Picture 1: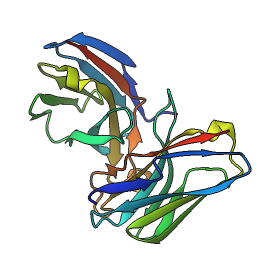
Picture 2: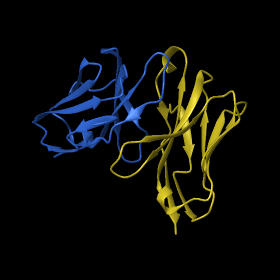
Picture 3: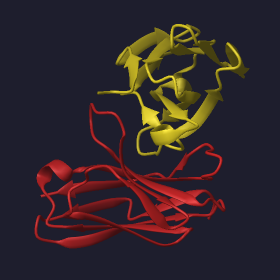
Picture 4: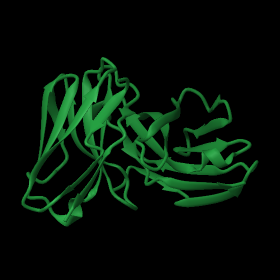
Length: 113
Length: 115
């Protein structure tokens, strides 16, 4: 596998479920990002990890919980989501210092029922 | 407050036409301006990027024009093809403070190129 991969590609979950999204980058980058993409809205940055430390959390509700166990893997743990959380969740990676281009994965299409 | 404003929201051109997408920003800390292309079911992919030390950059049929004094930049697609139909996002990033390493995206332009 090359680039940035995300699993699963599609996920349907009820509001009481707990699920996790996984991202893996094969580019040797040291920064990873979670974005939310909803219809008619700009890409919303959710979390930033640099060298496995969370450096940014953009007022994201606590029902979203990120985890970065190493520089190649990033998870987004989901629990008690709301229907308005339905969106495409994108993972990206880059080299952090100095900042470089961000490379995106294909995304996970999440539907909350 | 949106850091990068993009227009138009949608654009339809005939094959061979030159669609132009415009973006504007306010934060003078921005020094890197990439454009991303996104096809349905895919993540955004970097298309072309520019830094403010040049006013124009070309890569194949794609050209970025940059006006530092006006804080505006635009994407031109020469000889557009149906395969160029996608959503295009402009973005900006900076080299210091809160802008360091963070990409601020425009809302996107959905381009349709008719054969």
